[in-house]
Image 1: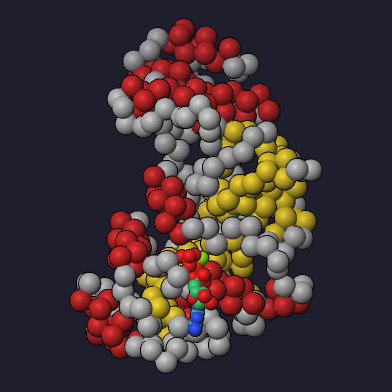
Image 2: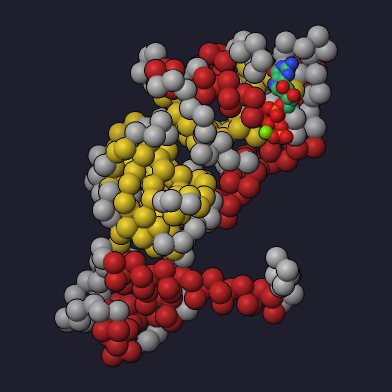
Length: 360
Ligand code: GTP
Ligand code: MG
C-alpha cells in the first residue's frame, strides 16, 4: 500500500475522491493532487474509516539483510522445569555474569556466549504469547524449546505445545529435562515423542534432542549449541535500516514511570524520540533499556528491550508501528481503539464473549 495515490485508494475502497480528501483534511494531512502518493499511516486511517482491513506489508526489497540472533520460546507441560531451565540458561550468559546477574527477566533475556553468539529467550508463558502473536500474524519466536521431564514423559501440555509450534510453523528443539533424577528415562521420552509424530534426529528426522538438568546445569551448553545450529539452518536475517516492525512481549505499569513494555524488534531499528502506535495505545519512545537495564538510544532486531513513553498499557503480542508525528499517532490509536470496541460489541452481540462482570 505504501505510495498509493488518493485516486487509487478511491478505486480500491469504492469511495469518492472528495470523500477521501475530507478524511485527509480532518486528520491534518495536506491534500495535494489526487495523484500524489499518501503514506501508509494515512492509508490505514482511511481504511479504518471506510471499514476495510489493511495489513502492513513490510518490504525488505533492496534492503541490506544482516544475521540476527534467534528468538526462542520455552514450552512444555506444567512442572516440567520451564522456569528452572530459563533461570539456569540466563545464568550461563557472559553479560549477565559480568553485570552481576539479572534479578528480573521482564519477559525476555539474552544469553551471550563466549563465542560472541547470542540467543534471545522469551520468558512469557509460552502458549499465551505464541498464540497472541500468531493471532496477529506475526510470530516473533523463531524456535520453540520443548521441555519434557525425563521422569514424567510426554504429557497433555507437551502435545499442546507441539501442536502450537506446528501451527505457527516454528521448529522445535527438545530439551529432556530432570535427567539428574534417578527415575529419569530419556529413551522413553524419545520413543513417546517419536510415536507422536515428532521426527527426531536420532531417528532420521531433523528435530534435535538434548538431555539436560536445570538443577545440575548439565547439558545446557549442548542445548545452546543445538539452538545456534537450528538458527544457522534457518539463516535468520533482518533488515536493520528503516522503520521498526516490533512486537510487545510483556507490559506492566510502573508506579513512577507509567506504562512499561518489553518488546522485540523483528526488522528495522526503533529509536528514542519516535512516535509509535502500539495496538490501540500510542506514545513517544522516551527511554530504551536493554535487558541488563542499560540505557540505549535504539533497539535492533532480535534484541529485547524495555521502553517507556506510552500513554496506556499495551497487551502482549501488540504490534509497534512507527509513525511520523504525534498527531498521526493519536489518530491511528483512536481509530484502532474504535475498531477494537466495535469488534468487541459485535462479539458480545453474537454471544461469543461474556460481558465483563460489574464487580471485576
Ligand atoms: P509451571 O510454570 O508451573 O508450568 O512449571 P515449570 O515448568 O516452570 O517448572 P519449574 O521450573 O517450576 O519446576 C518444577 C519443579 O521441578 C521444581 O520443584 C523444580 O525445582 C523441579 N525441577 C526443575 N528442573 C529440574 C531438574 O532438572 N532436575 C530436578 N531434579 N528437578 C527439577
Ligand atoms: Mg514456570
